[in-house]
Length: 76
View (tube, rainbow, N blue to C red):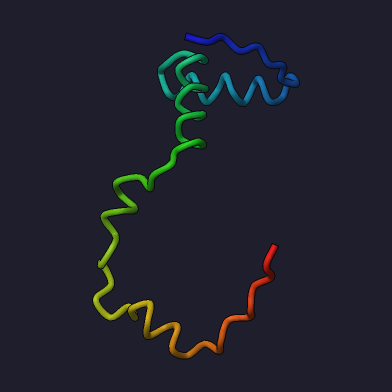
């Protein structure tokens, strides 16, 4: 397990301590959870569950049909 040292100004540290106290965990666990959340590569289950939740939401081809042609892309 890696260790990281970082520095916070006093006001930010105070806010961190309040958030950690409210969570009932440790500073280390709170920061680790924050890093996991901010670096997630998949949508949370609650967001994924919303897929199809709006029965009258237009399909992608219907939305694209009303748009003009794409601008040609530059070749590198």
